[in-house]
Length: 489
Image (cartoon, rainbow, N blue to C red; front, side, top):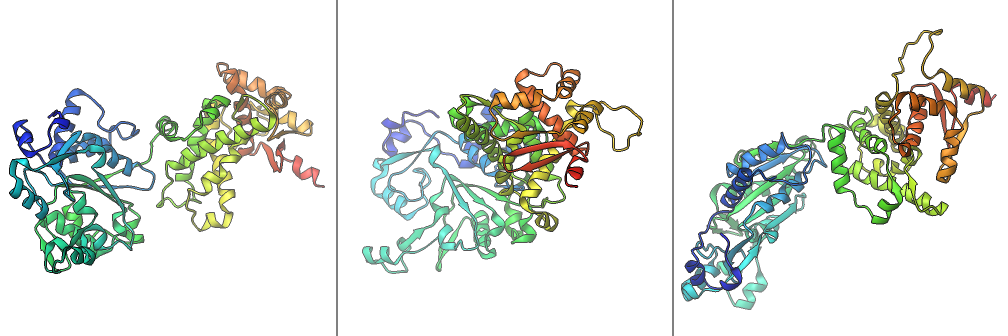
């Protein structure tokens, strides 16, 4: 109902306007119905869930359920919960001065009931915007009942000269203050069992108990919980009675393909406009960046149960652009293009986001990150170039013979990190077989992307044991596979 809220300041005026109160679950349900009928997106900016998570979430809202989003880290669980705010009415009225957003037509606090009894239709009301109807609490083992439910306030008792037996001495916690709001508890299994039981009491009985007080407070709340499947065995679990009262448990997941992952990274990356203006990113580089996360989720070195957050690609993309931007600043260039060697700059973003198993710890986080980059190169290689078979006949001609021969006959070449774009292109152009292979296999590739593809070809041949690559302090050196052995003799 669209009301001119600035003109309605008392209960009498609200009645005259014909306002009808409804629960928060009905608000969400009615507004979702409207969006679905109009063909509008209910959860904008969430990619990859269109045919999986979002339909399940919509069904849960239509069913007026409290919801548990179960999934690994970085799967947009909290984002989904925050987007539910957009399904609320824009404004709702509440009794002015109420700590718990009392509905003027259905007051539940002693303060609101006494005020309505005293002033009747002249009871002052004020308005709450939907943006203020979202409460969030990260569950940690030190969270107490007082934090969530409330406690007796001795200072209030002293100031008002009230006995501790008077319910007016209660200081409400976060949950009562979130009355008529969405309340999110992240990482629910981390809550102590006794705290979870107190939540069960609110969900089931509609009452709260504080220091011996048993208050009948039928709170109007939409609960959304988030949990990581690993937490069930690692740090705690959701107690059975509480789990039984959560209407819908919805499983989230990571992006299932590169285009979806790219959309998420592009949307969430925090970039300076000057970076965007300075650094050109080839499309292949964007695919390679996302492929690294896909490799990490399947890597023997990475703990699959912990997951690899979508934030891995996001922060890696920010580091990638910063690496290229830094080079442009050093060389005095106005513009530059991302190179494959710039991917060394994303290693700190990877190592901070992945949990390693024992074998990974033995290798070292930096080494694992470099392995993941090489594996991503290997996976993308066959998209652009002929496959290199593991078993080849000795006398059989291969598509890369000329390029490998070029390195075998020469001393290899170097790609320095701080080469200007002109020097970088000249170095790659000085290897004629590279250009020929690009022309044969990717004739339609944009010229500005072709140099990244030349690097990908070199790195791919290294990954397939056709060439060798050596990292030194200033850049990379590429040689034939056995050159590094002979040079050391």
